[in-house]
Image 1 (cartoon, rainbow, N blue to C red):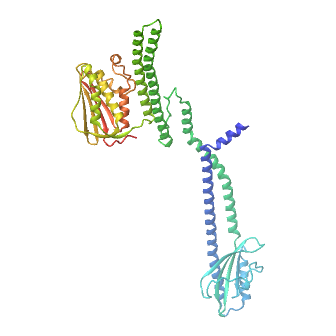
Image 2 (image 1 turned 90 degrees about the vertical axis):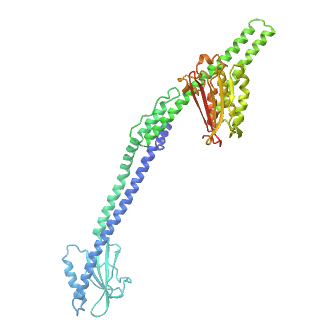
Image 3 (image 1 turned 90 degrees about the horizontal axis):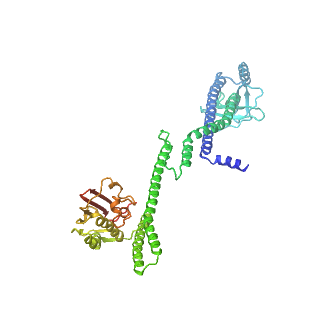
Length: 484
């Protein structure tokens, strides 16, 4: 029982139900306003038609009263008018004559129901040509009367009021029928509006139901599903395109995360396996102090590699969620490059590599000095690791427009063209067989370089050809404006 009630209330909370109710309410309001407009328009038109008729009749009555210059016998006029009006099929017209105080002097209706005396309105002087028309409802007599009054002055010089009264029952009956039709229409319209609104809402929101159903079927294991477009190009199609774009980005992030996790597990597995293997060998039989020292020294190398990998992973993870802060300050980029070159010069000499910094101008930028040195250190470290004996590495710092440019170029073996697009992928290493024999790189150096450059609002590019060397160019803004 409670489930059925919950479903019923759930329907009224839907957009379709709200659209249906709003549509029905607006339609009903529009019909009410239209009926009122038509009703008052019809009423005004009927009243104008009756008023025009009464004005003509009151002028005719006036001419009867004034046609005889010596006419003073009002009873004779009354008999003549009653005789003339008696020939009408409908007894709906009455002529009346009032004196200046509003008392009735003559009437074409022997059972005249209109008020006597009549309250005269200040409609002007006796010679005024203006006529006044009012609606009078007689108590207990049913229909109302439309009365047109006009001041006249007879031959005796006394001012009178001539009236023509019309029974308003025909117009009132027409208005009553119109009101009934409007009420019937206003009873039917909400039902039709609700039914039509429900059908239209269901048809209009059908794409939303498809989007909802597709979204329910999309899970972490299958992000390849996309929402079908209707092809109409409407708002729902644009919503579907936006959601498809979002799904594509999520799928890409999930794939990179899965690849990142797999690669991280692989990179961590090797030093952990080496540590476990060394410990098992050391414990397999009694060892001398010198042998144990050798095992511990090898373990320290693996611990160092694990520490570097963990630190690099932490940097990338914090950067991904926007939580890698930058301690900005004004630094000399050329001096930072000189410090890093001095740091790596002994290592380069041990490998028979010439490492040098070209003379250049002093370049100041707003940046995190430690992160910039880390970026330069990773680039020079890669060049030293993979340059080969006899390689020359040149570091150049220049300024161009509003950017500082750092170039690390070598004439080493270079990088294959198929590897260039993937160099900034995490854990990717070109020529894996060679790099595995190198100094244990995990393939995180270049991704960290790109992350640091982008956090500073800059970018990094790599150009290389096999056997012709590699050139890495880093561009950083002088003002320190970072990307959003």
